[in-house]
Amino acid sequence: MHATHYSSPEPGGGKVTVRVRWRAIVSIAVVLVLTACAGEPPPADANDRIPQKPATAVQPAPSIPPSPSPVPPPTGGSGSFTAGSGRGEVLGAGNKLIRYRIEVETGILWGENPVWTPAEFGTTVDKILGAPQGWTESAQHPVTNADVRLSNASWRFQRVDGTAYEVRLRLATPDTVDRECGKVGLDTAGEHSCRSGQTILINLKRWLNGAKEYPVTIDDYRAAVINHEVGHYLGFDHMNCPGPGKPGPIMMTQTINLQGCVPNVHPFLKDGTFPSGPWVQS
Ligand SMILES: [Zn+2]
Image (cartoon, rainbow, N blue to C red):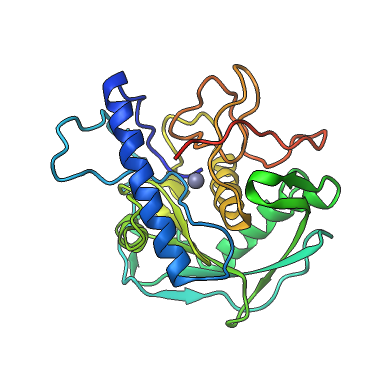
């Protein structure tokens, strides 16, 4: 869950075109990832990935212009990152330990925006992953899903420094996110976040301001994007809404189109249910 803008749904004709292209792009992305990281977790994907426009595109998707932000979003960014230091406590009691490293891009021109240090970003990610309805809830409600080859799966998490990690989460300016995600064929369009192999790139613009068309608080937006991208790392692809009025699965691209679902920023509901819907055909 990622990003900010919600593009409005595409008109009928365009949808077919997009779906076909998406399939092509995803196939390429999967091939690239499998090539680059054989033996790594599941195929790649990006949250809110959207297809890159073909050179010959004649029907660009309509988009809603972003509303003005309270202050201009940060620009700049060196493309390099500084990592957090220290280790956190183990969160949860699931079977599989996922160690995560925290990084923030250097050289960001913050302007009047609050400055996010690796320590602050790490603390926030810790809270999201360890929250009662977060992925750590899997210890009490293990996940089984044959489509993504998960059987009775549960996870626990620990923030680490150093190079022994399963996944790293990078907070980065939109240009850097676009460039890095573009390397695996994912178009993040200055708004979205993505996951590629062991790296998650979180779009700083939306981290600060949320997604305009996604009616949740900024804290909930942040939970949504972290939970969704970590979900990709854990093996999940995108899901559709299971039905009007139902809580959106965390693996929906809710910031793009709720499809009649109610916003839900957590992997699990309060009763331990793991909301899921049909896989997005890609
Ligand atoms: Zn996604």
